[in-house]
Structure formats: C-alpha cells, structure tokens
Image (tube, rainbow, N blue to C red; front, side, top):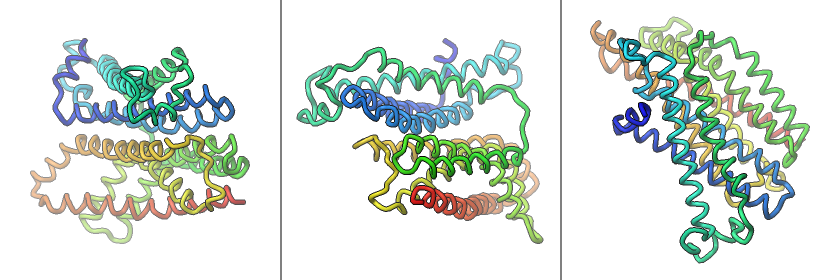
Length: 357
C-alpha cells in the first residue's frame, strides 16, 4: 500500500520513467508470447528462439533497475528511520514499485497479443496479424502466464539485489574478469558459428564481459582526460569521470556490446548473418534492445547528476562559472565517445572474424 501511495504521488518525470519501464516490459512480453506461439506451430528451433528472446528481457530488467535507483521515493533521507523507512523498507518499496510497473507492461502485452489474434474483439488488420501469431492454434495459458511472470519477477529480484547495502568496489577490480569473459564469448562464437545453438551464449558472454569491463574502461578514460599537464577543467572532468565510472561503466559496456553487434551485422556477408530466429519481430526486438540500453545509460546519468548536486552547489558557491561546469560535462561525454569507439570497432572486428573463420 505504501508503494502504491508513493507511486501515485510522484512527480510527472518519475511517472514517465515508470511508464517507459511498463512499455519496455510490454514489448518484451509480446516478444515472449510470439516465441511461445511459434513453438506451438513449429516446435523445431524453439529453444534458440527462446534464448534470443532473453536478450530483450535482460536489457529490460537492467532498465527497470536503473529507474528504481533514480526513484526519489526510494532514496534514503534523514529522519525516515524514525517512521520505519530504513534501508530495508525502502528497498522493499522500490521492489514493489518495480513489480507493479512490470506487471502492468506484461498485462498490456497479453491484451495486445490476444487482441491481434482475434480472441477479444474480432480480427484486426484484416486477419494479417492472426496468421503471424498462429491464431489457428491454441495458446498454452500456463506457459503464457509463466513467461509473462518472468519479467516482473526478474526485475524485482534484480532491484532488490541492486539496492541492497554493499561495499563499493574499485572500478579496476572487475576489468580482468570482463576481458576474460569477452574472450570466452568470442571463442564460443567461433566454435558455434553463425546460426548455431551456442551463438546466443557467445553473445551473452561477450556482453557480460564488456559490462564488467565498463567501469574499468570509464576509469581509464578519466585518467587519460587528466593526463599530461591538465588544466582545471580537464582535472575536474577527469576526476568526475573516475568517480562516476562504477555507475556509468556497466550500462556503457552493454551499449558498447550492442554497438559491436550492430557493426558485426553490417560487416557480415548476407549469406552468413547472425541466425536470429525471431522472424518478422527481429527488427522490433533489436530496436527494443537499443532503446532500453540507451535509456539505461541516460537514467544512470540522471542518477549521477542527482548525487552530484551538492558538489555542483559547492563549486558555484566558490565562484566557479556555470560555463566551466557545462564544458567539463561536454568534455566527459566527448571523451567517453572517443574512447569507446575503438573498443566497439575492435570487438566488432573480432566477432566478424570469429563468425567467418
């Protein structure tokens, strides 16, 4: 009940972010239902289709966690412990709020799917969507509800794990593990080949490896910004980037993995391809993955900006011009793009070689 009251009384921007989470969950839920309908019509190849559908699920869960972290209702404040809103209770509130938004998205996905199959109010679109969704075959109700429940359950569990109190780790700690996992992913892609059953696993290992290596890469980028006799602005941009690396690094690494996948797709010959067996929903699924990854990075940037508000106020009180702070932010963004571009290109070249060996 407390989570519902906090959700109802939130600001419009917070409500918009929750609606975006619900929309992402609706798209992912629709894709899972399509995979289920395809499995009823063509059981052969259903497992690779389900594995590829886990990619949008993973980035949707990541986006939901990022939105939960920026929710003002779940941020610790002085005096809340006295009314029973300690860290554990706030984590529970964030988990319930995430579950509500994701459940809404799953319900919308089910309603849209059944409507397009003509099971609610007749056949829309002259029956074209019904043929695509295999309306002539019955949809397993238990399997459909299980797949749809997977979205809020995964997002809620990930939110609870992300918001639990834990000691901060140095950004460079996971860098060797990230590089090792990326190498394992490239090896798995080379072994499976395009269209093989191990291709989704190889891409997953590569994405997880880049996600783990992201904080270390962002920290190294901050060190390069302030290298070789830096001025005040470069020092400010570099030190701030190093401080933000633990939170911006992981979504940045995921976005780098998606960029590498896009470059690899463009570089592969048409006869090879990636073998994504999602049929006509491959394009919408790719768009969903890209939008969720970009929205996660922007949401994390909003979180970092909220946490840095006291520092900005102190700098302004010391007489720092606002233009210096804006130029430092622009320098940080430019440095990240310039630093991650070669990483994306290099991973794309390695994956292309692995798939066309």
